[in-house]
Length: 299
Image 1: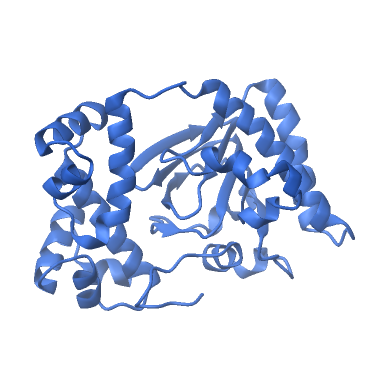
Image 2 (image 1 turned 180 degrees about the vertical axis):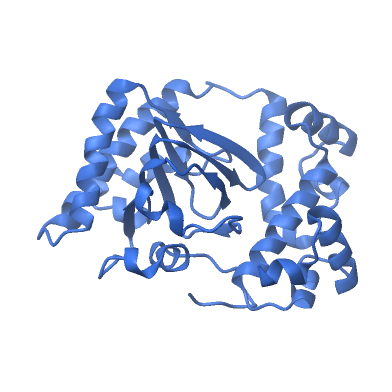
């Protein structure tokens, strides 16, 4: 995996496999656009606590048994069996825990994989679902599991085989799964968001875009065309966190990400996140996490 101190490092599907899965679990050739593994086969190779990372590709998990906890940016999600989870590309995510008895499938896919049929405009079709500021996830009833699981099993078999037409079949099968999920997504999504809900969604997107510009609550409120007091009240009511808390937690997540996946020194991370002195960053990191950046980096 390449590291750079100049740009945020994101991981391709192949790099995710190399970083988080033991080498004996890797197949001889992993296509750059797609990978899939059985969750029960890779669960023990995932180390906890798992550092946050950003993926260049979309991720998916079909959890048929067990449970898991994940973070998407700062949002914590708990999942139980019969759940299909999508992790949109470019979002900060990480595993908090995966129960030992968990089973299912886990993998990643690049958007170009689904562009095999330009007439269907597949990417545009899934765009809203995969660009959600929330973590798209779907509780499946028994008929839906009985429909989706065999398709995922077939995709897994094809991917780990020498089938001559697998690169044509896998996108078609995956597209069918996503179309089923899309039907669930639009069936359960609210027709319109309230103004406070829209404000929260826009705030989250803006915070991610501005986090390296050392945003203050007043800066973000101004960009959203509301008062600082109003923004704080709405966030507190709907998310139970203040504007300042959101900013602090996002800075910590970005710091952990840089400390884990770049060659940046602690001083470089501090300046990148807008701290005037590395000591200020060290104190901030310790107050938020209970450990020093050097300790986190060693782990």
